[in-house]
Length: 115
Length: 111
Image (cartoon, rainbow over all chains, first blue to last red; front, side, top):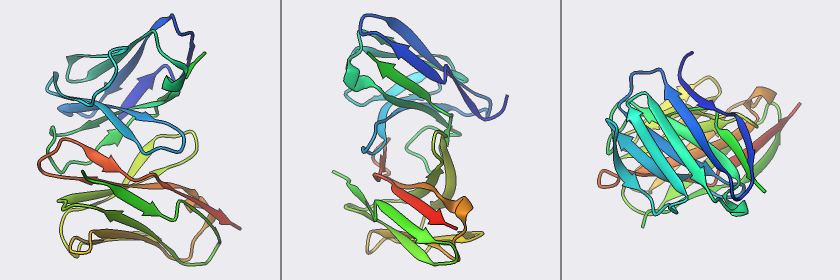
């Protein structure tokens, strides 16, 4: 595997379910990010991890819970989501943590549908 | 609060034509990025612009940055169908962890 990978690629869940999204980066980077991409809206930063420590939480509802067990892996745990949480969830990584001028490299995303 | 505006949001053009996408931002910034996203795919980095007057070119795409005007442009020369995609600009500040993203420009190039 190369670059940034995400699983699953598609997820359909009910509002009472608990699920997790997984991201893995194979680039040796030190920072990882979760973004939400909704139709007709700009990309929204959710969480930033630098060397496994969370450095930014962008007022995200507690039904989203991130976890970064090591610098290569990032999870987003989901529980009791709402239909408006349906979106494309993108993971990204960069060599150095922000603030920096590094390019962020994105995974393919998980298309989440909440019924 | 940093705001980023792209225009146009939608552009349909013929192959062989030239066009420019604009990215305006509201406060000072030290870095600006252009990304491309194909339908159903992730974002691919195109350019990083770090200083006033920076110009970068890759194939038929050229990006420039004017920090005084708070404006970046992405110019497409002699467009080809393969350039059809959504193009995003993203702007960052030293004091902030975030990149602020534009809404994207959906570009359709017709044969």
